[in-house]
Image 1: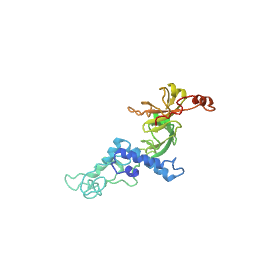
Image 2: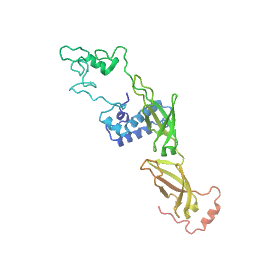
Image 3: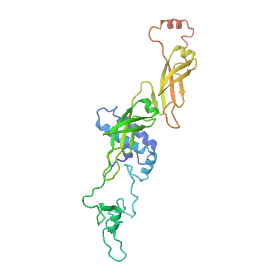
Image 4: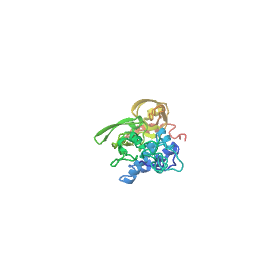
Length: 313
């Protein structure tokens, strides 16, 4: 049985999702394998934390769990048969004992009009149950399949736009759809793609933990992306159009005259490709002088009347 997800994340049961996400991000940063190389305990806890967050990341599943309709494995709970002060899923300490809902099960009719429960249990549960309503000798209850853990590494650009990756699980190859905006440490749950169930029970789940490779130019800022763009002295002073490589595309930018190094240009909708609400791309212009001898530029600067005028700070 899966662990109680709120307890794994260290928050109160029923906590709002914003609090759940905050706790997850803090723990994922502390426990990520890149920050704890060769630390098996941290790695295992990282997997548990990721699985707990993945379970609560589905609003409908979280709401059903908070209401007590499903357990931490996502399986429905029995509604129960009522009865005050009782224990167990049927509302009684022993459903087949005195006072239980099936307390007369297995007994033949004792008088006119009394039901024969033996036949009822035969119809409801089949050959697995004997005359007293309990399992026949040798009967074993089925068990759900085992969850399988896997990891995927993707490029920064793939995390921004979303992608598909293939995962090898035993002798199977499974296509995994990775949503736009996925962050390092996020675990995706593929239901029914884990180990096979026994006795007619469902298969386990495949838990895929994602690692996003760092990029030398692009940085995430929530759903926005930031980058620096080197520009020449003439482009800074005179303005003009320059080509810029951005995540998954190349664009032509207009630089205004006297833009100054540090000027930030904003491209709406060019950040994380969230459906209906994509992030933005912020480009900071950085003055880049030619490499090598700049004696000619220094000579020109010496004749400039405003060379010692300080900029606004």
